Structure formats: structure tokens, C-alpha cells
Image (cartoon, rainbow, N blue to C red; front, side, top):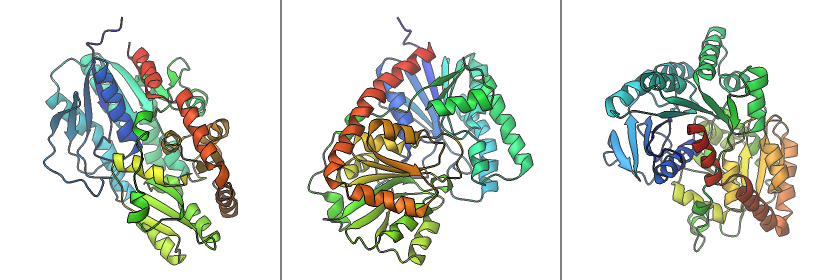
Length: 411
């Protein structure tokens, strides 16, 4: 029998009330492990970014117990996802693990048996290593983005000295970890074949989805009424609007199909690129695009019930097989998907295998516009696309199945 008396520490830069796919993923993991009888700690940043309009700081404590999870919120000079120049953000990432380790030492007196680090930011692996060394703990590194390669591909990091520094940190992280988990086979191939990490160390652990959270029903088309979108065909993008998303493509595609007055594009979220995208929409005189702030997790799940098609976008400059987490959210909510992704993304395979919608490479505005019109013309099949996605999630991405695998890795 597994020893459920183990103490587990999850280290992540985002945790609710912040709204990011990573924050909800780590919350679901922490609460599921706590429900199974483990003593679970989470070390994360103090919430200052990606918050719903309804959020009010009512004095969130540095240390609190939430749903049997002991949460440590650490104040940092600059939030890892905060808007600012890349030099400031780079320096912030370099000092981040040391601030985290100090906060962990201050608040945890118990023995830690396993530390799980969510990356990005990759530098948190340094904190994971230090915790593992202090407590002689098992170190599991959950790698979502291949950094710094993704930042190099996007032109975010150009300085060769900085590139070399982050590559040294990357190599050290892979060496120090007892187990590395990645969310797709393509990402495993990158680590084992290009980064020369031992294949015995790297495990595919799909990002999961708590399907029960998406079974709520929206009443009276609340969001459609609120945004004056009743009777419209809604293409929806929800989440972080950053350089890796390449959302210019969606705005330019929206311009190409603007003669279809029934179509509207709803963007809900925030990020480094949001203000620039709003200016681009104004420059293109787009009347079919609406920008909306982040909504809470519960509101987001209800909002999905009112849209017609969920959009996913990644810049073609990306060269790694990353799979955007929002694909699973759309599928769990029975929402058809249109994905415009870099050629290397494993998301193409998921959409093809599931039959939840369509995907194409994100390098051609005309193709993007045609793909949007294709699913718009398939109104009679939208329910089937949504059902296909839902059934695929049931078979492949249930939270219980994925957390079972993590428990095996812990032991």
C-alpha cells in the first residue's frame, strides 16, 4: 500500500485566485493529492496578475490552509508573468528561486518527501533542487515549455551570453531532477533526442482536466446578454495573450471574414500583448472583435457553454511540440475547436484523433480565414465535434488517471 503520510511540496509561479491554465492545473493536483491523504504544501507567488474583475484583495495571508492544502504565497519584486521589459523579467526569473527557497524555509518545518516543480519558469527548478537537497526529497520536474528554446524561437532572448546562461540552468535542471514529466510524446522526443536526457528519466504525463467542473449549465445566456451578443456566432479565445500565441493572425483572419456580420470574435483575458492587439484591432477597423477582461474560473466554465467555437493559437515561430492547455478545456465543455498552431505542435494530432474540430499551421492568414469559415458553415455538425472532444477527454485526460500516474512517480 502507498504511504499516504508523505509530505509533498508543489512549487509553481501561479495558483488561484490567479487565472492561468497552470494555476488551475496545480490547484487540482494539490487538492486531489490532499484528498487522497497526503500532506500537501504549495509554494507560489502572491497574486497580483491575471485576476478576475470580481477579485478583491481582502488580505490574503502569506500562509493559509485552503481545501486541506497548505499554501505559501511569496512576495517577489516582479511577478514572473508581469508586464515589463524582458531584461527586468530575466533578472526576476534568476532571483526567483532564491526568494522562493527562503519563503519555503520560513514556513515549512515538516520533512518534505517529494517536491514537484512546475516549469515555466524553468529557474524554479533551482528552488526544487535546493529543497530536495535540504530534505533529501524526491524531485519531480513537470516541464510544459522547452525553455530557453521557445524564447529563442520567438526572438525574446537574443543575447548569446543570456542564452548560454539559461541553457546551463536547463541542463542542470534536467540533471538534478529524479523524474521529468512532459505533456506529449513530441516533448519527450525533444528532451531525449535533442537535449540528450536519459529516456528512463522522462515520462509522458498528459495535462489533465477535471471534467466535473465543466458539467455546469449556463442559464439564460447571461454572457450573451451582458455583451449584447445574442444571435451571434461566437469564436472565442480565452486566456493569456502573449508573444507565443501569435494572435495577430486571428485579428487579420477576422478582417478577412468581416462581411459575415453574424460572426464575432471574443477575446477574454490579459497579457503582454493585449494592448498592442487592441491597437491593431483599431488600426484594422475591426467591428467584429471584442476584448474582455479575465473572468473567474467558474465564470469561464459557464461562458464556454455560450460560445460556438473555441480558438487556440500559437505563433508559427514556436518550434517545440507544445500543446495549449485550453484545448482540453474546450473539449471538456463540448465546444468545437479551431486551432492554428506551429507545425511542430502535438495539438494537431490530438484534434485529428479526437475529431473535435480543425487545425492548420499558423503561418497563413488566408488559410486561417478559410478554416474559420469552414467550421462556421458546418453548423449542423458543431454538436458532433463537441461530443467527439468530450468523449476523447473521457478516454485520455481524466484527472484521476493522470494523478494516479503522478502517485506512482512519487513512490
